[in-house]
Amino acid sequence: MRENIGLLSCISILFFVMDPLGNIPVFVGLLKDLSAERMRRIILREHLFALGLLFFFLFFGQFFLQVLGIQDPALGISGGIVLFLIAIKMVFPMKEGVFGDMPGGEPYFVPIATPLIVGPSMMSTVLILASKSDVGFWHLCAAVVVAWSASLLILSNALRLAGLLGERGVTAISRLMGMILTTIAVQMLLTGLAQFFGKSG
Image (cartoon, rainbow, N blue to C red; front, side, top):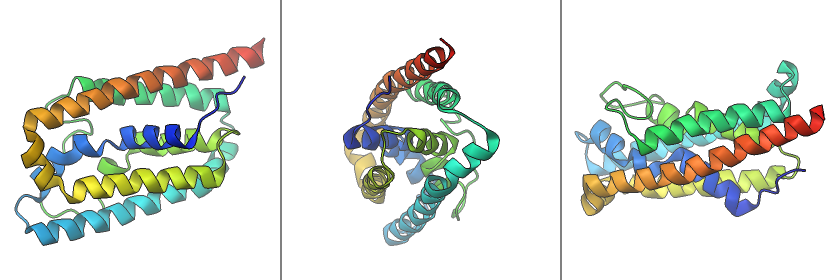
């Protein structure tokens, strides 16, 4: 039995993994020495880089999976584990953050486009969703664009939102997203196991 994943579910999964609200303090810290206008231009540029990465994995991800001989159950189980680890770090944040230490200065491609906006977990999530037969290609393209647009909108206003929510507010929202992502990760893992035992049985 295959799990039916709707457009809203795809958007939610991608948005939670991208975690733009959780990235607000990191963006503010990286770009705090720049003017607000320069900051917005950099965020737009880095989001365009990130969108290019997402569509690269969307178009060519299946080819790499076929070459490597990776089947749906393995991808679902491994993806669930990766998402679960990311979610745990969101719920119980470490000092160096979800993605580890990052260099300072004005960024170019790294570390904002990747791994902050599109990291390994986001790439693997796109591959997992693209591998499901009940998720149409254009369906997933639309979900990627919507989640990406939401991230761009939120992070373009990072300074304003950081001041409005405060450090505790941003942390609370990030942890809430982590809890929701934990549930999604467990469901993905259970679906992968069900597919594996269904094929084995």
